[in-house]
Structures are given as C-alpha cells and as structure tokens.
Amino acid sequence: MFNVYTNVKFSSLVPDRRGISLSLSIDAPPGRARSAQSRVRANYWDTVGKKRLMQGGLVALVWKSGTNIDVNLGIIASSLRDLTDSAKRHNERLDLRVVFFDSNIELRILEILKRPGEGNRTVLLLESPVMFEAIRPFLEALRVEPESVPFAKYLVHHAPAIFKTLKINPPRYALMPGFSYELSSLFPEEAGVQELRMIVTNPNSVEAARQELRRSRLDPSQADAIVDALTRELSLIQG
Image (cartoon, rainbow, N blue to C red):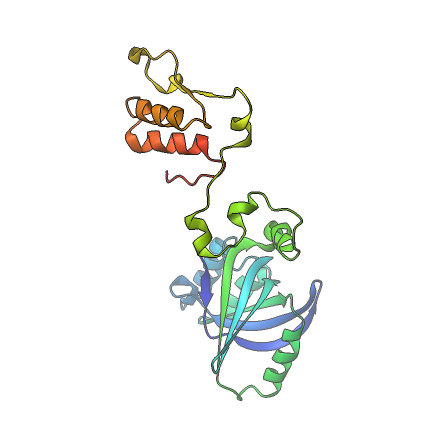
C-alpha cells in the first residue's frame, strides 16, 4: 500500500542533520487537509501525522520526463510540527523536506531550480507507510550477495520452467532414522483412534495418513494441508 502525492514542486536545497534536504511542496490530500479553516487542516495532520508523512518515513520521488521514468528514494526530514505549520499557511499545498539517498539528485534539482519552466515532466511523491530505520537492516542485506540463502533451492530466482519439475524435500528432522509423526491427537476422543503414525519416506504411509485424517475432526482440505505441511520443508497454506 502506498500513498501518492501529486504535483510535486521544488523550492530549495538546505543543510540538514542527515545531509542536504530538498524542500518541496505537494498537493494536499482531498478532504479535511484542504479545509478552508486552518485549524481543521492543522488538526488533520495532528491526527494522521503518525501514519502519513511521518518523520523518518520512506518515500520515493517518481520522475516522468518524456518516455523516461526515474525513481529516487529518500526519507522525510520534516517534523509533525513542520507539517501542521505548513497546513496553517496553505489550504491546497503542503511543504515538507526530504533527504535523498543518491546525491546526484541534488544536481538535477539545481538545474530545475535554475530553469523551472523548461522541460515536460511529471513528478509524484510515493510514500511507503514504514519507518526507514525499521527496514534498514533488510535493505542493506539486499545490497550484498549472501554466501548462503535459507531455502535457496526454492526462494532464489529461477526460470519458471524449473518449478514445474522441482521436488520439495521433507523436513530434515523427518528424515532421521526411525522418525515418524504421531497424528492420533487430531481425532476426537470418541473416534477411538489410539495410534496413527506417518513416515514421510514411505509413500504408502503418507497416503494412508491422508485418507485417515479426512475422517478426523478436520475437513478434507485441512487434512491435506496438515499432511503437506508435515511432509515438505517449505509450504504455503491459505488460511
């Protein structure tokens, strides 16, 4: 889910504790954010400011110039107080500051500020409703090639044709000598089932358990889901 803000206009580049921040303005969202009363507009951002355009939130500036589309990521540097003060001054626009990760964008914006009327371009601001610091470790991990990836056989990108013949292995613990699942607890007490063992390396045992579980407290789809989850090291179950 993304929030999209239209009609981005640039105003200046200013020093920020995170680096150089870009001051820009966007169309205010429809509704109370465009109220004719400044108090109503300020109250709107006081209410939603912890969920929308929050300081430290991740945003993307999307440029369309001719047939070219560029995307630049950054974080919001404006505080909630900055948003409410801006809302008090304008009823259709909102001012904010953004620090971008790629410093090359600063040169591009300086050119636009020198010649604001030149070029046919459309600029949007997309907001992801997450704090950048919360996902920073994950994003940094994606920048390097890992030495190992859990379940790489299935999760690493492959040609689609590979998955038509790819076999999902049983869990490693289920392959230990003598290991078996005891599934009798899935039956109601009145069913009188004292033992139902399933050995994942024995196709007949697996099929017998599947058929028996369809007579348990589970419906057929739930029985299949249980068996598939216990016999595969990677499963996707709709719940």
